[in-house]
Image (cartoon, rainbow, N blue to C red; front, side, top):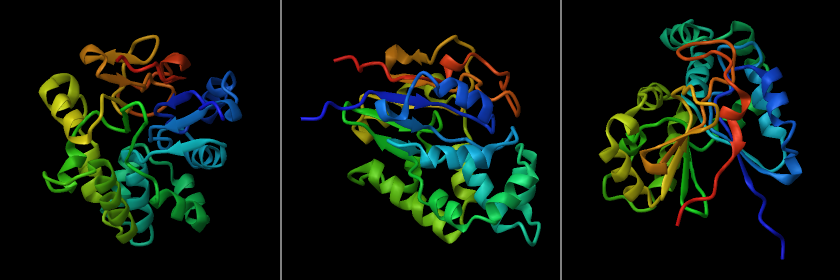
Length: 246
């Protein structure tokens, strides 16, 4: 009987492929089950390269981040130079990356198929943002909420309606400011804890809070971009998932 691989979490990369390679060096792909929490793109110059690398890394799952949603909106508005393109540029989008994605239909298709959330066997819920807002996409009484959210996210991406996703994936710090919403979200999704990126922290390792019921893996790995982006220690963004408390 095969022994399950340990889980490795990768927080926001934001186009810093050089630091990503260095951070992953101690974790050979064949020895780890790797999860990227989204926002591989924007800010730095190698976001599309980071997407391709993560897509092709064995034993790896990539989640959708708000910047991936922004990028897909920019791709839709690329020719007409519509508002989604301007929003993406304002959020750190790199024009050469958009052109590169436009020339790669296979990568576009793969990106539109990314899940927003994954519920691990130990009850850990992985998602990009530290908010329960994606739950608004499905009825309050829906069963298997994670699967229902992922189906609706997939539908919105396939039809090009990304503005709603961007709106729901942008809020920061909801779980820290309103712990009752964290507890409610965990109950609704059937999870024991949530692991996320999106809101940069300044700790030397992934930052656990709310009594360990939430862990943030956005330690500022990428050296470029917006709020809190400062090239923090790699181990604050790329690290094994600690065992869940019983």
